[in-house]
Length: 255
Image (cartoon, rainbow, N blue to C red; front, top):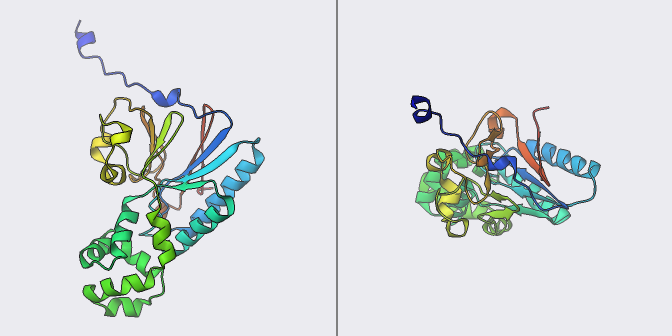
C-alpha cells in the first residue's frame, strides 16, 4: 500500500509518438543571437542534409532571437532575408529580443534602455555606428540615433514574424506556452517570454512544444516539449531539430 501511495508519478511522453505529415521535412533552428558565422555553418549543413535525403516538402523554421548578445545581429538579419528570398520555404517566429528590437527602433528611450540591458548594445554596434560614437551618446541621444541606423528593410522583415506554427503533432514557439490554455488562445507575451510556468509543467499540451529561449548545454527532450537553445552566442553550438514522419534527429555546429 505504501509503495502505491509514494510511487513516483509517471510522466506521459507524447514526443515518443509525435509525427509530422508524410512527405514533409522540417528543420527548426534554435536561438542565433548575433552569431552569423554559426548560422551560415548550420544552414550549409541543413542544405547538405536536405540534398542527401529523398524528395520532400522541406522547410526551415527559425525559433527566433536572431539578434542581441553576439557580434553580428545585422549580418544575421541579412542572412535570414537572403536565405528567405533564395529558398522561400522559411518561416520565422517572433522572439522576445525581436519584440524589444522593434520597440527600440521607434526611438523610445525606455525601450532603448531595456534593449541595452538584454544584449542590444552588441546589436546596435553591428550597424553603421562606431564604438566611439556609441560611447559619446547619452541614452536620449542614442534613442534618437537608432531609427537612423536600423534599416527599414530589417524592421519590416522582423515585424512580419509569426507567433506560433503548428505542423502535425508539433507546435513551434519561441519561449513556450501557458499551461492549460489552448494554442489558439495563447497570448503573444507568453509565447515570447514565458519560462518557469512552462518548464515546470509535466502534463501533455495539445501538441509537443518545440521552443528556444531557455539555454541548456544540450537539447532537452521532456515528455511534452523539446528545447533547442544551446547558447550559440557563447557555446559555439547552434542547433537544429530535424523532423520527418516519426523521425527526430539533430544537426549542430559543434563538430
